[in-house]
Length: 521
Image (cartoon, rainbow, N blue to C red; front, side, top):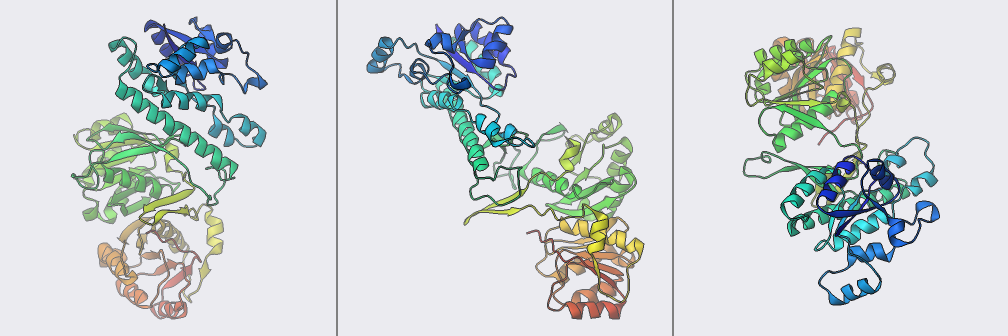
């Protein structure tokens, strides 16, 4: 009779899976809480301690570290010496190992948890059984993820209670990835750099990633692409695609940009993203007005872009977007009402992405980019305008002309927008809506010219301007003045700051300095 050893922290689906194994002719061994759950559900199960003749000791630290367990898992079935030794030691082969590990990461992230409690969540027997089974995957099936229960049972029903060699190999590889990620989390914690506990740069970075979704294609149709998610994160980022074509690599980059942009704003806000840069951002009293203003910022560039809103998408908002944009690729929102879905689904290929409301909050503490030289890692640029009163107090008025209350509000909005535009970045605003954006330019004065040209003379007149970095020359001010800009916010810090301020004074432009820059390469 085939034997399965089941010992899981995550009990989801385990009762159904165990019943399915019994239906496939398996005898089940189990421990601790899993044993209790199986017994409560009237599943025939043998305690590991009864099977080995060795009770659990050291407060449960030693349960499965026994030759009858590891010998049964590691024994090579067609090795005569192994088989003789197993018979002499009364060791039966174990054909299936179903194990997932103690909740180490979840415990480590709890507020006020003691190091002793965290250390107790370092699983010993679990990784040992997983690694033994994965090493001997030619003969033993190892299952570490409840998501695999259904497919394993289905394959067993077609192969007389077994799975294919290819499935065994795939499950073994996944098992090693899980244990590698688990050890990485422990090492990170012991080094005092557990993700989520502080924002310092770690001495070591560990993680493992699992492919969660195949994508339509990469940046171009001839490139294959997939989405991978961290095995170390206990809370995976989830989104639901409600309609439309499969997502591509570029789509997901732009979705991430939308979420990053809208995380800067608390009021009803909307943005349009094209090639990972916003071409319009607006904050308004309701989401319909925000959508309208964001698209109006640059309707030509918005064509073929993706739209994001930080409130549930209403039917009216959907109608505004559809009227103003004849073609757009994706719409992201924290939910859609029934009317909005009905309206939007008239576009067959439009991708509708629903996310949780907290998706618009900053999550990651570290930002990384893989290069030929290695992995570049930095702290996330989280120095935004979380406290508007405090931020306002920190601003330096350096020109003779002072900002009005209306200009101050628009400048602060423009500064938030400049933070999420690729450098060199210039943002023009009227109220709390962009009217022109100059992004990703090698020359800052060119970024000023582009932003003004996109806005046009009528909308630039009286506008506010934000720059993500300092002005190296007063020529930027002269261009802004010619187009009618009335107020500027910028970091300052150039050796030519006095010349830049003098240029503002000559042009009767008000200027505020923030003392910080927001480059985004």
